Length: 269
Image 1: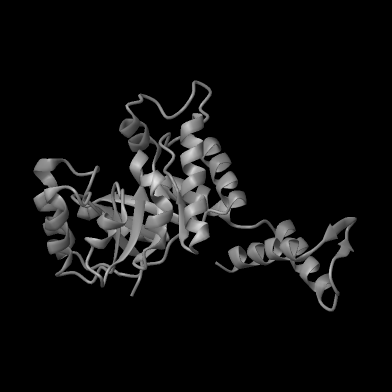
Image 2: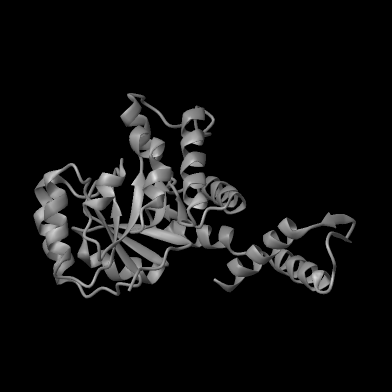
């Protein structure tokens, strides 16, 4: 069974199995990480820990190493003896990378390099892909840059463009869109602001790196009582209406009703 996708996805190092249960209890989906969170000398023991764990496949996915690396095949071999059905493919750069994942596995493609972002629409179209995520720091590294953010904490233009490109690629193909992690763990105000923008822009979920960030993400994705009340009243007013109509001084057409339905869908989640 394919794992759920948020709204809060929490990374957990694969070589820290004592954290697995706490992570699952905290987040909607846990990403057991075999890539960047695990040093090269610990990857073998991390795979062994993953194989030994009793994990709910509906709540967990595994980030595997890039398809271009020797660790990729080793990660897949380890997964073969588990119940895991979803992988996050690190540094996905092409449809060919996705096609290297066994066909019975669902894929969340992590488009975090220049090539991955440029090819994100083609990647999103692959039938195994259920979602796209993007990443700022690896993107900047792939471009030869040194910083994803300006001095005031806002993303640089190339990063914002890449974020939008991946979101549009996911949306164009009806796939989930996952926003990047917020690295400043203690800055809940900054995380909340980015999550609120993610929700308004159409992201499905936001990934995080610490359990303390989960509730901030939940709060941002959870519609307020006022939003729910407004959406409910708007849809009720639309019942029986023919074409566009006025509601609380605003002109309402089908696209505004779609926005309202989305609010109620988020409330149900």
